Length: 353
Image (tube, rainbow, N blue to C red):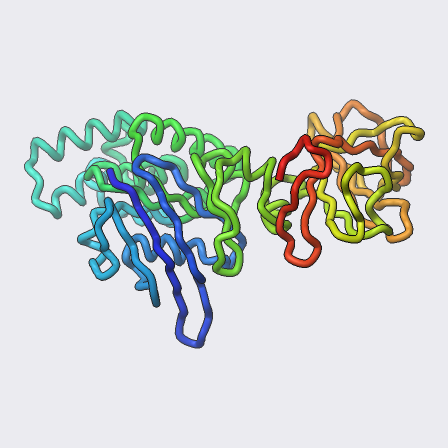
């Protein structure tokens, strides 16, 4: 396995579209790095540049400390798993797994041994004599992953590999990938637009927007200490609530000047309180039931009404049209610069910036 580094990458496509700007990222050997962002953020372009499928306009790509910017894809010894399974339909699972090694001229005994090892690791031993049409979507994805694993590449690159699976199967396959990474200790770079997928898989997560790297951090740090408003809103479901100005920010939030800061508070850090303890009164507009939890979509009763979402236990009786007093957890209040969107130091001291 090997480390991967992108140094000051720029990528401008014909027509002038800047896909990546001043992009630098260090991925240590054995890390599970997830690149996440909305459509058009540059995450897939970054992955393709690592793979050698795109050439950067400027900057360098290093694998294992060696500059490979001009090295063609087939000589980088990387394995890429795509959104489409790209299995050979006329070949069995065994033949699909063995194909890459056969093309490289590996000995028959080596091929048999590696196919056996990988099929055990991915629990597809019973499927070796089936063809792709006889497999479920999850089984096909495991075979596609196994075809990458069988040749022991220097790193694995994943381009939204689970997006074709249904939600339940996607969750199961995510867990399998995490277990596999823990077992292999392999360098993995994974692209997704799904922030929940990113949070559950990544050792660290790189968040991109409009070709610019916004923040690189472990999942919990991204959630608890977002670097700016974009990360705060993108990471977490439902997204963080943002209140602006004296017409929205309640008085009495220690250390927070409504004229110089944007207040951020996550839906799970709002509690229904007694009226005399409330930071803000809201009117419930929509109640969303999610089994163990309710998401209340509300609007503040303030000089400048703002939408606000509250996450609360499902055993509470709440209906559209209810007025609710809300209390904010003081140690979970976030502050952002209204001009730049960047994180400021904590308002309360309990959530350092």
